[in-house]
Structure formats: C-alpha cells, structure tokens
Length: 499
Image 1 (spheres, rainbow, N blue to C red):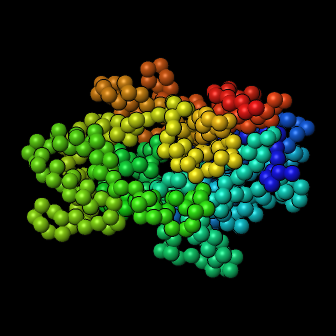
Image 2: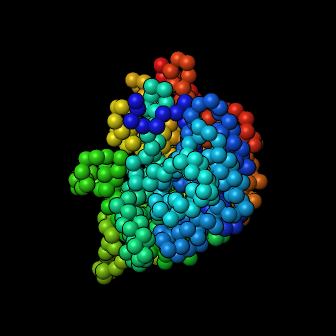
C-alpha cells in the first residue's frame, strides 16, 4: 500500500494569477480556455482516479488594490471578490463541476502571490464555493500550504509538485509566520501591518510595480523579481524614484533571504550557514549593464562622477538601509544615489534608455528553451530526494521538460498569463525598436494584445500544462500546450516515458 495518494493520471498547471478588479489590470487572458481545459481533465480516464493540481499562484492578491503586503482580516472578502469577478467566475464553475465528478481530486498548492490560502477561513470559503455542503465533493479538495508541496503516486512512479518559490531568495514564504497569523485569526486577534515582514519580491510588486502598472498595464507580464527591473521602472516612470529609494534595502532583503531558502524543501535544520548567502549584486546588475553603460555614454561632462557613484553604490549594495558616502564626503543614503541616477537618466533619450533597460531585463532569456537548466531546476533538484521520479514546479513562468537521467524527470508547467515575445532583432536595433516602443509607451493591454512584430504576435498564445499518466508499459510524463477552447487534446511538446 502506498503512503501517498494513488492516481491513474495527474495534470498540473501553475501561475494562473486570478486577480485585479478591472479587466485592463488582469494578466490572465485565456479564461474560457482554462475553464474548458478543467472540463477536459475531468473527462479523462472515466473509470480511474485523476488529480488536477493547481501548483501555486492560483490567485494574485498582490494585484488587488490593498495597501497591505498580506491580507489578514479581509482575506475572505478579497478572495471572494476574485472568485465572483465576472472575468474568473467561469473558472470556478468549471472547478465546481470537476469536484462533482467521482474519482476526481483537486489540489491547491500555495505560491508567493496567494499566501492567504494558508488561512483556514480562506480554505473554507473555497471549499464552500466548490462543494457546498456535499461531504463527498468536499473530500475531493486538498490544500498544501505549509511549504511541503504535494506528493502522490502514478503507477510505480512517485510524483512531487511544488511551486518553486521555496528556492527563490526574492520570493520565499515564511511558513512559520503564516502559521502564526492563522493562529491570530482563530483567536480573534488582528495583525498590525508593521508585524509582517514581506519578502523582497512582494515589496517590489506592492511598492514599485503596482504604481507603475497603473499606466503601463503590461509591466508585470515580465518577471519583476530581478535587479535589472529597476532600470526599466526608472525609465518608464522617473517619478517612482522616491518609492524605489528603499531599493538598497530591498536588495539587502534579497541577500538576507538567500540565507533562508536552504531551509525550504529541506529537513536539514532551521538555520542556514552564513556561507550559503548569495553575494550582494553589483550596480550593473541592479540597473543592468546596458543601461549603466548608457549612463556613461550619454553623460559626457561627469563621466568620472558617474563611475565613482556607481562604484560607491556597489560597495554598499546588499546592506539593508546601507549608508553611502557622497562625493563631498558627507554621509548620505541610498536615496541620494538613486536621485542622482534618475537625473542622469534624463540625459538619455527615453526610447534608447528603455531599449537598453529591456535588453538588460531579458538578457540571457531562455523563455523558448524548455530544456534549459535554470536556477530553479538546479536548486530544486539539488534538495529533492532520489525517491522522486517526476518533479513538477512553476513560479518562473518558463516551461521546462528535462531528463535528469536514471529514469527521473523534471517539469516546469509554465504559466497561463500573457507572455510577451521579445526577440534580439526587436531590441538590438534602434529602428526596429521604435514600433515596439510605441506599443509599450501606450501602456494598455489592448495595444499589447493587438500588436505584432516580424509577423508574430507580441503576446504568445502559450498556455502550458504537465500530465503524468499510467500506461500499460509504465508511466508517461508530458509537457503540453492547451489550445483553442481547451476542450480538445493538448499539443504535446515533450514526452518522457518511464518503464
């Protein structure tokens, strides 16, 4: 008898990001396709047992217009608003129909944009919406919200699903603190905003990304949790400089976070050694190498001053609230450095600055290489035991299908939100970037959705899923693309068969 649930098929999707009250603020577009796909999964293997795993970031409470880093007292209200939003209601109807079918199991795994699903109050709300008072339906819904992921068995293979932010120093969850908040809620006590310490990625989204997104709706279609994002944000909206003034602190939290991520997915104690910390990032990594060089290229009179300031910033970067010496020897803060950098940016034509910033943001982009062994792959596979045959993550929005050898396989099930298709040709040539710049400057989702360059749509039509199925000869794992209305057989991108 297996120690874990046993299924004939497991289907996994991730990073749906339901959230945002207004359609023009929502990054999930293919809602009808998703509802259709849920119905398609429900119809698979009618006589067997099938699980649908929602592998993190099902909701996006960070996209809601709240001032808090975590929604506590109003968590039920915020999640209920998302479920009732006309843009997403069909998805919830499809999920309700899924758990109504015998032999179906629905699993919610926590991500870093929907940490409120760890609260018992929110879980009861979800169960009530999907199953009402029907005990059989309610028993078909599971939650994994303590950072343990979800493990099951398909055939003779063991499958492990986890969101992937557990190894991301920008976006790790403090599961112990979430448990404390849950205890507060049950005990009828609130949480003062200053008591919750958000991770660096959450701060970046709430303090910096969301205000910029008011005008440039597309901004979080790119992964924001990288230092090079700062240059893009400053170019788009220099008025945000004051809000980004705490960036030295945010990056410091990222470095501090790297000391904690080794706890995640691991049973090796509770404190990582100091040697596990990631080295502080350079200023070129903060602003991006191309944009930093642009500062030097376009600032003719104060080139030495630019370099000196960048070097001084670099020396102090990674220190929370780090103190930075100005040229005159007076002690200053990171804000003074940032103000100076923002002033220099005004010397660069905005179109050229944005082109450089986007090149930095997308440098080394491996979006289309589903066999690229990225950091999430390396760090997750390093701590998952050999007993696991199939590992499935999400979080990065970048689909992956990798043969690990010895009959073990790794998948990242990508995302269901819009993905922008940038090419080297679009960014390397100033003339080619001009029409792209016009679309980006317009800022609306409508302009993004309608744009095409080089005969290709700017927004990729790519919604990814992973399926792991028992067969007569073993187990087959596949990375797939869900097409059209989602009700037909998905397109297989990569398949691994395990005898």
